[in-house]
Image 1 (spheres, rainbow, N blue to C red):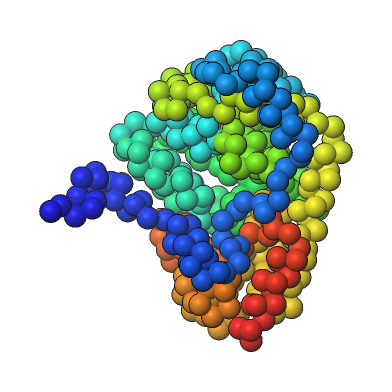
Image 2 (cartoon, one colour):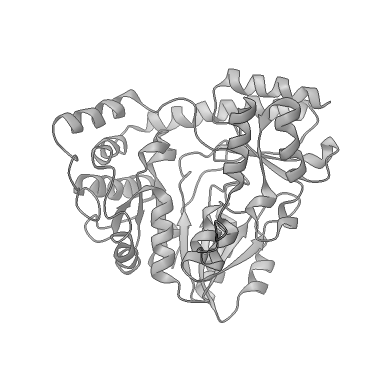
Amino acid sequence: MAAPLDRLVPRLRPHASTIFGEMSSLATKLGAINLGQGFPDTDGPEVLKEAAIRAIQEGRGNQYPPAHGLPQLRQAIADHQKSFYNLDVDWESDVVVSTGASEIIQSALMALVDTEDEVLIFEPWFDIYAVAVDIARGKAIGVPLNSTNLRPDFTRLRDLITSRSKVVLLNSPHNPAGIVFTREELQELASIVIEHNLIVISDEAYEHLWYDTHPHIPISTLPGMFERTLTVGSAGKSFSFTGWKVGWASGPTDLVAAARVVRQHLSYVSSGPFQWAIAEGLAFPDSYWEDFRHDLQQKRDVFSAGLKSLGFDVIDSEGTYFVTTNVQSMGYKDGLTFCREIPEKVKVVAIPHSALCGDPAVGAPFVRWAFCKQIPVLEEALDRLSQLR
């Protein structure tokens, strides 16, 4: 009898299992607090639930929505880009709706990357990026973040560019590092991209989750960048409904058109009633986004302060659901060992950066924690972690 993965093409075999599956299984098996997966443990706004239910009851979205997304949602996305970032996009030609942000990232890579084309990605990276590049038959080129503060290293980026380089896959606010690229960093990146005539796929799923004085700036707002940037957004992250799987991309007509070609042959369409609801959500007043950010910032502060008090070396989170720690300060050699031991020891689960890198050594000391949980859950996790001392 053939082994289970014998039929799987070789380039995809390394992706057969994920660190998230491993750690979530441990959490379930041991009854551990799961601070590994990045999903909230409370639902988003009731008004959006009611909007989705109303759409179902009224028969809106129960059948196939238009292939590229509900017109009302595409218009809302275009309005959102204009309102927040002063970006002018045509809702008819410059927006596409997808089954979550992941699908549109995969679609864009398959549309824009040919065999052995290189995709430059700051590492550690969100786990789907590497497999998405492999599915597209491209080559993922890891660009390690600075090992001290997890900021982008542009000298390293320049050194890694070759004649096969095609795309920069950017993520800011950044998962898992929790950094937000500054305007100066984005300007440096833009100058490199323009110099080498590269395309940017900008994953901005956490665009509204930035804290303190670290506002999110879309790279497409910089001079010379709109025409070469496909910008990705996520309703799951913006409204705390990760199971609804509504994502989108916007940008210049040619990049959106390319992504549309592939995307329409994947899920074709999805999330009909939820698209109606998200169209309403994108019209929320500024107070919604401010309250949303404040709530998560409070959770970040509670959890980060608690980790510091326990002796963890914490890299302050500027955005996303995540905070990173260097666990060598706790006497551990590397994050993978730490993450595999603590579920048994104290019944808490986290994710090692090394599993989110092409070269595991790049992320070896670091661990990612999800703080998008209720404060009593975070406090219980901290209490359990105190046993490590």
